[in-house]
Amino acid sequence: MLSHPDQVEQLRRACPEAEGAAVLAGDPCFDRMLAARRHRERFRRALGVRRGQRLVVLNSTWNPEGFFGNGGGRDVLPGLLPRLAAELPADDYRAAAILHPNIWFGHGPGQIRAWLDRARRSGLALIDPVRSWRQALLAADLVLGDFGAVSYYAAALGTPVLLAADGRDRLAPGTPLAAFVRDAPRLGPQGLLREQIERALAGHRPLPGPAEAATSAPGAAAALLRRHFYALMDLPEPDAPALLEPLPLPPYAPPHVTAPLYAWTRVEGAEVAVERAAERPHRTDGTAHLAVHEDTLDPHALESADVITREGDPDDPRFGGPDAWTAEVLRRYPHCPVAAFVTGPHTCTVRARDHGVFRLAAGPGADADPAAYASALAAWLGAGGRVPSAGTVLQVRTAGGVHPVSVSASVSA
Image (cartoon, rainbow, N blue to C red; front, side, top):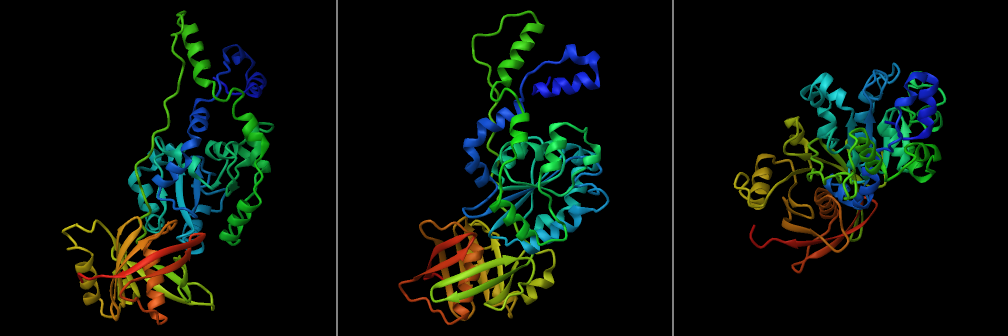
């Protein structure tokens, strides 16, 4: 089963005896992705990608020289993951990894999760390698990959691709994949990651080769395959159209960041700029504080936190509600001035030690992590801001835009 006439010619050159068994049948995998492109925004929301965020998908084939292997002797991925967390602001970027099924089954799911535990605590999503990789690829803004099929599919879809491991010596010369690997832009592992990613996004021009060579019959694989199967059985085809199973909507899996984040902030009146990352910012045009999730791997980080966060159902009896939890946290950590309980995708409760308890809610058009709103409020209060009895609206600049956030004093705390 081949997807393009060029592959028939390659087969003829490599193994003439097999040419008679070749069948041009399109590419059902690619056809399913083409049919599901209209659901891109749903796939992005399933991964918790917010408006203004960019989804960077890391992809590795199972070859030893692939991205998750030694990358041609450089061990690219182990050094890259902590740098992604440090250099890419958490509210501007979401990261996910598609690893070939043979990587999962060769090493075992427990070992993969153990190797990637630090990255997962910084928000990396591990994509189901069988059921959800196509949806993640459709949701991606950029793919950091290698010479595997997923990177090629991404380029065929018109998505920007940066190759971190090319494995060119393993590819048959003259093939579309070899041409793609030759022409695709490279990730410089020693260069600034954010700068390279933003340059790739801004200057992206789809490569024509992958889109043309992925299949010679886009959207027709189901019909071609069924026609061939029924001919082999010497049976008439059914009257109903031949259709492929649609790609399912993956379960909702928002980022769960428990690694400490440094929040750089700049207050200008009622507007607060916020940028959170795993590395302390080297900037002099604002202030920075440390925001730590209560479930951090290192409990000592809580002792020096400026903001302690967690998320959960406001009615969860284990925490006693946002008011009780925030009060308990500030009692336990007397040096921490602010505790924030995220109660939903757009709301949180913040207790500031010297100012009281506040309810924060995203206004019209706002779509950022409520924990970023909490950091913005902490910075604003620290700069002398006061919430009037009627409440106020902060303009939080993060995640590629300005997000209006209503702040009201709690009457129940």
